[in-house]
Image 1 (cartoon, one colour):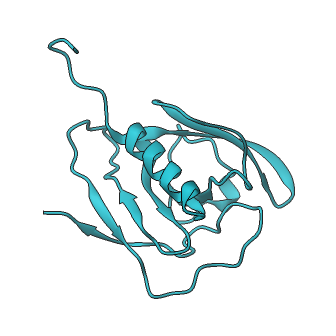
Image 2: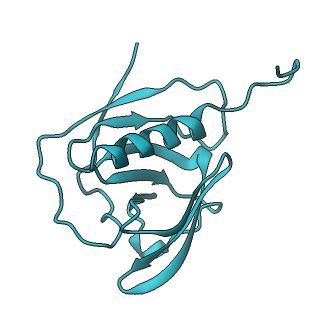
Length: 147
C-alpha cells in the first residue's frame, strides 16, 4: 500500500495496456506526442508542436514502455534515431486502423489528477503501410471528452 503521498500516474499502465491490445488484435499502435524540450524526436517531423509515432514492433527496435519514458530506436527517412518521450507528454495512444484508443490531457504543468478522454475514429482512410513512423497529423483521431 502506498503511503500518504500522491498515487503514481495511471498513464503508463494505460499506455502499456492499449499497446498490448493493439498488438494482440493486429492493429498498429500510434502515439501522439506534445513536443517540448524534454521530448527527443527528429524535430523536422514535428508539426504544430506535435508528432505522431508508429510504435509497432515492426517500426521500432529496443522498445521500452516504462513508467517515466517511452524509449526506442526507429528509422526516419532511412536514418536511425534514438527516440525518448516522457510519459506525461503522450497525448494519445490509438490503433492506426480504426482510431480506437485513449487520449490524455497534456499541459505545460504535469498534473497527476487530470481527466482522461476517449478517442473516436475519424472518417478518413488510414495511411499506407511501411516501417517508418506515421507522418504528423495522419489519421489523427477526433478527441471527445468523457463526462
